[in-house]
Picture 1 (tube, rainbow, N blue to C red):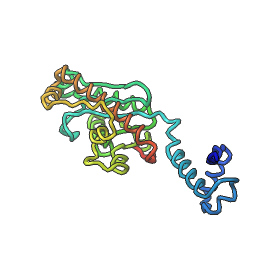
Picture 2 (cartoon, rainbow, N blue to C red):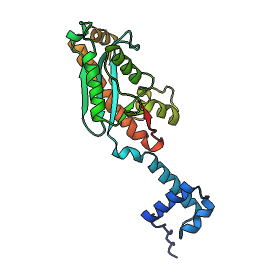
Picture 3 (tube, rainbow, N blue to C red):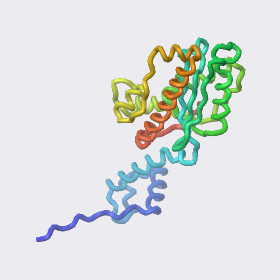
Picture 4 (cartoon, rainbow, N blue to C red):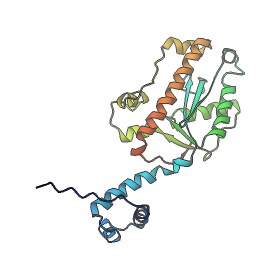
Length: 243
């Protein structure tokens, strides 16, 4: 006898999905939702509800201008160091960037003043959401500190939304370290470029070849940050925190 074909449930219609959202918002129990759907089991309704919730969790990002930000510095403390470069990769688009010059690095009145101002202007004009890696504890406070020290108006609270991928990696993955390097290696994201200590020292002294190497490294970091963001987007709710 020929095998009977397994019955395949029809695709969910837009009207059904809207009804799911409405019932979920009202907190209707799954057992009570069955009566609203013809031919749908309680398990099917539960599974589709969870799928819709996940889609809705990050839907607010669709009409936002997202930028992936990373800075390179001479020291981890803003009152001991300065910014060497910054890169901001627009989601699905080009990289905007700036880097100090040797003349600026040997002039105590210049240093990173110009690139700090260009970064603030770019953030203000080009993006609605800033994505960083550990930017909550490093990049954003560092930039804010340098701007305040240099007399540059930094963006006020609430001006831009911020997503820190460090916390998504720490919360959604179980790795030996929660660094950008470890996350990208585990997820097979290529593009991280190492820099030797000598290059960092030379860059701090303003040598052009070293500054170019730092900027290339900076570009690589924002490229892999975007790839990591897209890879983890289905598994985490991107909250609307401020920078």
